[in-house]
Image: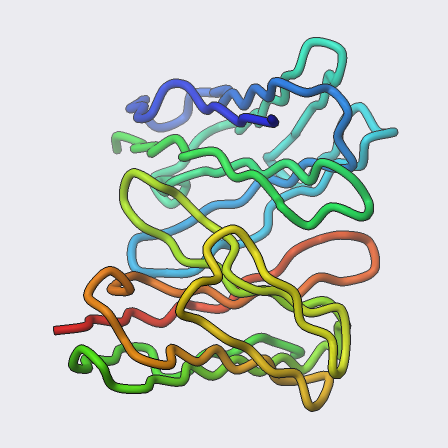
Length: 113
Length: 111
């Protein structure tokens, strides 16, 4: 059974630092992996989608990598800003015909001004 | 801009009442989903649909139903609301690339 883990559950870093958020999954046979951010009381905002055949995706200051063999994805945030404060979730889709997408519990990120 | 909207955003109801949460998307996506989000459980799939007249059960479907009469809408109905259904409900739709997009959520309180 696929499990998705995000450690740590919470993280505080000073503004301006580069940081890495981690997502691990137990079954390497995945179809894709998606990163989201969620602000308090809001919905999930899509950040990056990585297909199983891809190694990384970039959008602005964000870079997500995928290493299926080790069951890991990382979300790299460059030059962090207070507006980056949010909960970041990763989600794994096991197969093209499987819509039981598995979400991690998220990492709550706080950027200190 | 195309978008996905949910209504109502907040709802308080009583045990035993029927409740319908609306979800409307303007992207013309075939695939639509309903999730609930609870502390300690994260996001769990309730029902999903791959197109008009198609509906499928997710992992926590008991007590919920959906219908898909057109591409744009996937309403979620709680036939007889229970306190255990107090939660935040999210609708999502998926484009052909596989990217999932979420609505802003509907917070439901069952007293």
